[in-house]
Every structure is written in C-alpha cells, then in structure tokens.
Length: 478
Image (tube, rainbow, N blue to C red; front, side, top):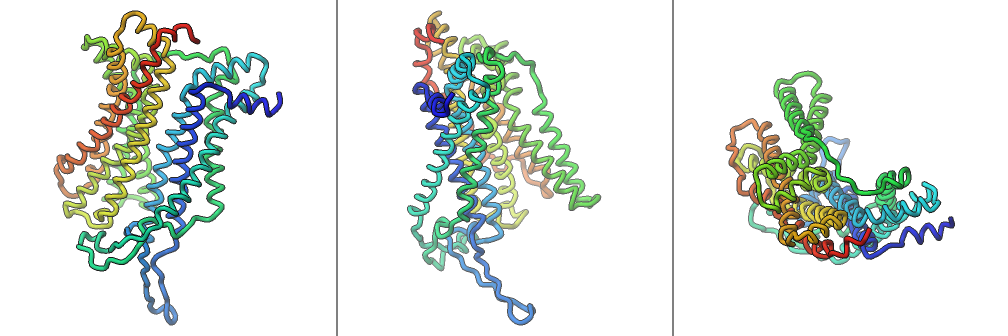
C-alpha cells in the first residue's frame, strides 16, 4: 500500500471524524500556548542586578520592576509561576485526548475493516497515528501563532505600582509597566521542542489506543464491563495521610536525615493524595449508584444508576483533572485563610498571588468541564442504538435527559465533596496554631459549587446531541 493511500485513509471519515480532528488540534494549541508561556516566564532575565564593589566586601542591588505584578518582578517567584503554568498543560492535553475519542468506535470499526481487508498491523497503526499526529502538529503550529499574536496584542504598558499592590497599600508611584512579559522570548529551540513534544505524545497515545484494533480486529466492539466495587483509590488517600503524619513527625521531632526524609515523605504524601482523589469518583459513583438503584423508584435515576454500575470508569476518567483542581484549590484556600489569620507571613498573602491562583483554577475547571462534555458526548454516540431502542420502546425523551444528568452528577457530587474535604484536612493537619475548620467556608462552598455547576453544565450541553442520537433510524445503522 502506497504512503499516499495510507494518508488518504487517515483523513477519510464523516463529520464526527472532522470534528475530532478540529477539537484535537484546539487542545494541542492550548497546550502549546501554555508551554510557551511557562518557558517565557522561566527564561525571563532577572530583575535584580547585584553589583559587587571592591573585593566582594559589599554589593549594591539594583531592582528593575518592568512588570505590573510582583509575580514577574520577583525573580525567586518565577519558578513557582512557571510550575503553575505547567499544571495548566494537564487539562489542555487531557482535553485533546478526550477529543480524540469523539466518534472513536466508528473509527475503530473502520480501521478493523481495513485490517481484515489485508492491511498489516503496521499500516493500520500508521493510519490511526497519522490522524492524531497531523492534527496535533497543526494545533501546535496554530498555538505558536496564537502565542505570537497574544504577545503583540498584550504589549500595551499600563500604569501600576507593583510594590503597593503586593502590600495592599494605596498606589503612590504609578509608572508604565507591562502586564505580561511581552518584552522577552524563550530560546528559539523551545518552539521546536514544544511542537515535537506535543506531536510525540499524540502519536504515543494513538498507538496505545489502537493496540486492540491492530492485534484483534474482530474484537472491536463496545462491551460493558461488569466490575465489583473496589475501594483502592480511597486506600491511597488513607496512605497519603499516614505518610503526611510521618512527614510532620520527622519535621517537628528532628528525626533522621531531614534532607532526604522530608522531600521523600512530602512528595509521597502529596502524590498519594492526588492520585487517590483523582480516582475516587469511580468507587463513590458505583456506591451511590447502588444506593440509588435500591431506594429510588423513578426511571431516570434508576437508568443512570444501571449505566454507572455497568461501566463505572467510563464516565469518571475525565473527572480526574477537575478533582485534582478542586483538591489543590481547597488546600490553597485553607492555606491562604491560615496565612491571613496572622499565623503565617509571606508572599502567599499577596493579592497578585491570589489573582494568579484564581486564574489558574478557573481555567483548569473550565477546560476540565469541556473534557467531561466530550466524554459524555462520546458515551452517547457509543450507546446511540441502545438509546434509540429505549425511545422506540416508549421511553420519554425527558426521562433519558434526566438519566444523562444523573449519570454525571451521581459520581461527580460525592467526588467533589471528598476532594474539598481531603484538601482542607491535608493542610489542617500541618497547622501549628488552632484555626476553626469552618474558616474559609464561603470560598470552599464557591469552589465546590462551581465544580458541581461545571459538571451539570457539561451534562446539560451534551443533551443537544441526545435528540440526534436517539433517532429511530439509528436502529438500522451499525
């Protein structure tokens, strides 16, 4: 088979295939913009210039505050800003990966048919990988163009006093400063590295997704996976708290080699809590679904409960990024509340930090909700024949709509509440001064309510696809 034929097969498809390519490219573009923004912050020239006089007996520090925020003016704070921007790549890449699943069952069946027609496993893998690779490559180039356009549009100095804003005092020395670091560029090789990295990740994920098609093409069909209730994600949360207690004991009692033990126990506790929170939606959703099926008698919740019990992981994978964001947001709210109570002093109380943290949190929740939307749309497209069968049997459209909403909320609501509780408890366990657990309750309520509202909004928007998916003529399609 000639390479041109393989490329033509990779780009063949219907409207769902073209939408998959477009949204995958958009996810890659968002990831590229964030990566380049993090690289720009990392490679900014220092704003503190130390001039040594004599033989190093004393020195003079010259500060050049070029930007309107202390987060960019303070050279020591830039690694934290770059790391926070890197966290934004997770929801962007997750969005791209979830977009790649749009219409995937029909694509897998088409590739399986090509495989049965005589194509080799390598050729099938090339067809699937070429689709995602080209989409992410185009998206990465589009992201570079958007990044350069943002630099041009945002290069408008504003009157600001960074020192006054960081301390909460009225501005006194208003001078023109840049709101963003549009006067600097990262090294040119980072542009190529970002494009190669985004494209390589897309190729790797596509190759992994197509392993069943290339090996067993006859098995390409959707099957519900009946799984027992497993609580190991919650065990990870318990392990995280145990390790956190060990970390605090080592720190306060000065036990052992703290240079080794403190980072080891600290990162182990954080990663255990993060992975436990990210994966807790499936067991909690399955538990709530079983309770709903036992005690609820309305058809919508019962139907949603049966869908969740049949495949608890399909609708909860896309919740991982949102739950991680809620966990980090709850921990940050508790830490800021503790600092503002006068028990801790430092740059964490600066308003610029609050605004930047709020920006990162809102963007993460919005992108994670968009990924959840694509997961729900993909699930409805996969089950469209079953949904059409329910409509043909006399099930009202309103009942199916309520079932779709409940399928998103049954695992989402308890998982969000658990993420808030775990985030608050993780910070509260490290506090050395008494602070009521109700401190910051308003902000925590807004965080949890916003996350649940994002889940509900994604489910509501997905209902637009429901009416087209339950047409009776779907019973005659494959």
